[in-house]
Length: 193
Image 1 (cartoon, helix red, strand yellow):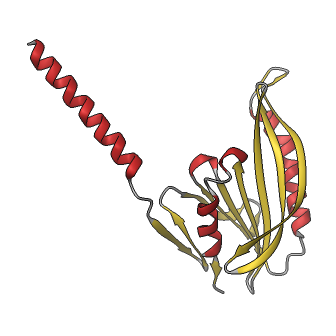
Image 2: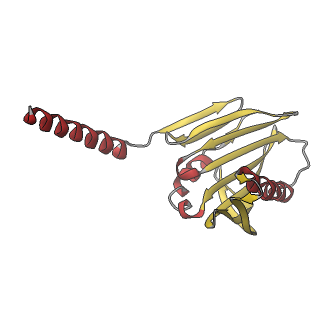
Image 3: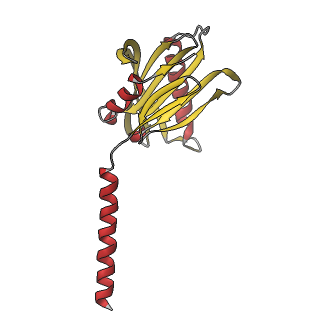
């Protein structure tokens, strides 16, 4: 009976190792997102979490994708007649972040989350093969005394149909490991009327 249990535990361990090894070595597949005139490629480790009109603003479309290491891509597709600037959009996001994050996890009067060290600067990146100037923001989310630096990038892409506010966000410690993911998404981004 003892040999049977030993054999079973070895088999279970071997199956677990094979499963974990298979997961770690599974190749990332490039998938295509193509809906209502918006197209981009993304790795299979990403998922589209939303593609819908913004509440109370049916002419504005929000597409969000989430990837590994808490990476986020947001495409806010406004009508081409919109006058909102990239600077206004980035400032509004920073303001909402500063007011919403601290309220996410409150225990009575005690704040367990807070936003610190907001810093902005200019940046540039290739999107759909064209250079685009943008804005980068660096901020810290403080969770019970632990500092978690994040980086956000904003770009504006203008098409005949949309003015698209492109936003990427990732914890700074994962900014290098997600660089290729974001480059695939942004290089392949295209819009049809």
